[in-house]
Length: 521
Image (cartoon, rainbow, N blue to C red; front, side, top):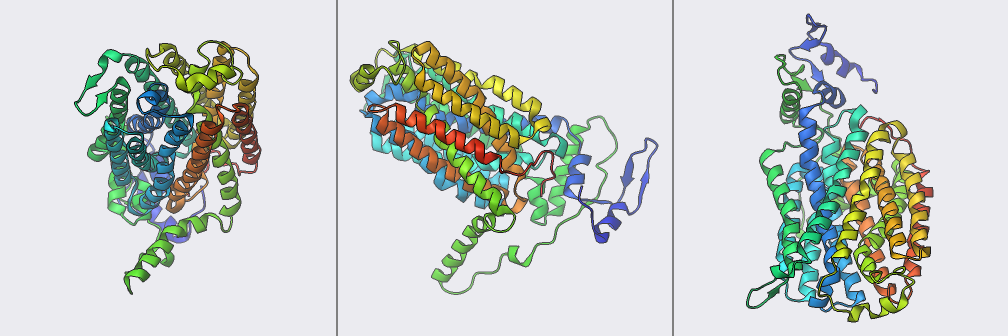
């Protein structure tokens, strides 16, 4: 733990003594953030926090991945070409790109919890309303706004969660949080498998033929809306953010709440009556707005861009450049390929590789979507479930190996697995290799979630994650558009491009600093 100056050391030790059990108690001791987190203990509070934040993370996965599962059926009802499907899958990432930095900036200025409530509500509301869209373009627009909400909750949820964790458990707990993405993936695949093939669920609303895939879209919005409600009613603000904002009493109240839940049955109170608050620099203080409207807007715009500028100056610059490369490579590769798995499985339904079976690919747009082929959703479910071994592995070794090594190695192995998808010859081989890609690539995402939260200080953490996830959304958009344009004419090109980018990301990760079990700045 970093050394404290004299002014911090004295109040920490003031009026303190040991009780009969040897525990340090004090009536007016002040604790730093890291010490307060340790004193609050680890237990029930953190497990409840994991469930709540995990459900929010799973809801984002459901909302993003539901589009990929409805494509094999919705393409007929909305009259979609392969290019249209590429644009549709890209639309939610475009919304996430716009929303990521916007929500991240607000979270660093206004608080994590309030931003999570609003962004999750936006995600779920527009996701549900999209089920009523009668045309492709309206459905596209509503999915964009849904993505705008997702763009806020993904980066902010990891900042929020990490700021409650003791240093020695942070890596494993963030890895556990990341596993809920798999849960959301499995949930989306399972609901799609249960609902979309059931054409008897179709109803007529007079102006709209409400197909089973539309019901699936509605069900996919439920996790986000329920998660927003839970955060609104039950969850506290991040104590780290409260301390940085100068709200000592509120932060102390959160630590006391953590202590009570983690030490049920223990009579002694939280061993501090105050916290060490870092004084704000002059640059961080918000100055009153003066001048004309245009000048005020210009000042607001400059303040909004200030966190980005800080990411690329001084000691943060090199790690920011490396993370930018990694986020681009992994997002282009993972989302560009993953969102198309159900469609590729459908095209391989009659046997052969999705890319080698040229005649099936060229005629797929003219095939009937009904009756729905249930095997497509079963295969999607199996692929989603194959995340489990990678998630378990990450939780067990993250705090021992560190995020840097796991990130680099898993990206390189993912690159090899994508190349193998290109060369396989049968449908069963395609499914097997897709499962390998799923199980290994999830390790990359889990490691990136841990590393990303540990590389930046509190006042930049959400903004940094929002910015880099925004870069990732640009890559995801490009990946989906490239697949949409080339999947019919030359399927090998996007697969080999994904393989090359994942390899480049793995090599770039070797340039990151080691952050294993470091204190949060």
